[in-house]
Length: 109
Image 1 (cartoon, rainbow, N blue to C red):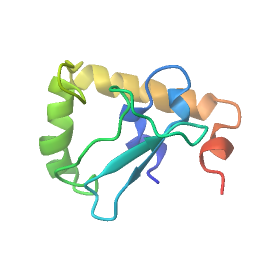
Image 2 (cartoon, rainbow, N blue to C red):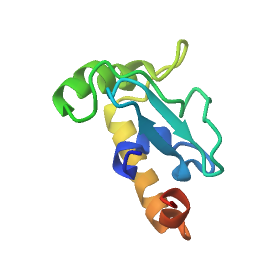
Image 3 (tube, rainbow, N blue to C red):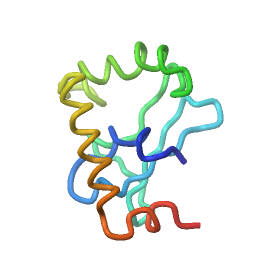
Image 4 (cartoon, rainbow, N blue to C red):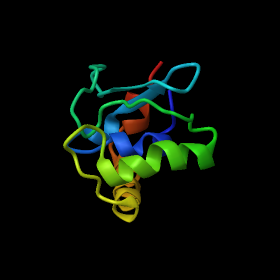
């Protein structure tokens, strides 16, 4: 499971601040679950394929994040741009951290 800072682009909408993101051992595949443990499949929060894993920030930015900023997650979407996405991500992190018992709900054993 990734920390909230690396999940914030998948935490949009009502209750989205409680979404959790997991990546495969090779860092290429992502899945996102809501606070009830349901797989998230909406086009805004869906897990995506990583060409470069998030541990390689430079490569991940160039090949995964920058295209997302321009085009969004799915065909037909339009990205909001880098500045808007980082602003929204910051809001999601703040909402998560100020949510009652969010840490316990998301990181429960």
